[in-house]
Image (tube, rainbow, N blue to C red):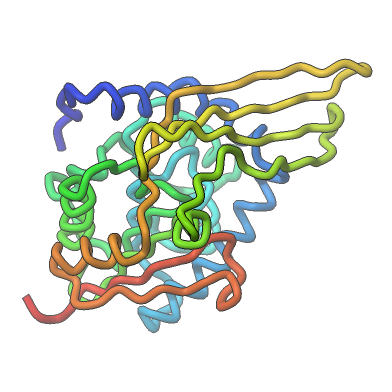
Length: 270
């Protein structure tokens, strides 16, 4: 696998730069990140093994970030490779794997270039709203094709993202997320995002974290990541174009996961 070539895409490069800055502090912006590692892995384990009909699987987490899902699944006995476009996120994932005492392999790879890497897997994951970093139809189809190429016949792509069908219902455009508030060992924390819509279906975020220390508040923020608010029909269409016969959606009421999950099985047909 070769290193990612320059994209000549300022919006994409700004998103990569966002994660280069944000990766080392990501866990601080999530209430009980260590607990989330276990909870998410438990749900994904049930989904993956239910589709595949086996207890353990080879898994490629192609947008692994700091390792939230990859580490939890490795702890459950799966053979896991994690990749991400952000070198800083991969470095943090490697450190997190050591802290959690799990064996997982991590490397840098743009999800649009999965077709260029080696190996096949039982499952390919892109979890927690990573697909919406792909801003064009062609980028989404390229990523879906690459996922299919990395799957063995009968393998499954497992995806999750925000429920944009619900968020944009009635042509609304949310301008911020609901603040999450929790107690940490250092005091109260509040995390939220603001959303700046740069087109009808693309927005740029600023991530805020407020820390309470000694009766004062400290604020940090990270700016620059851009998302496209893909509807489910758009994603399903792209994966069918990429060669998947069907894509099935599950919702939090179905499995308890915090976002809608899509399952696309690589058909036994060519």
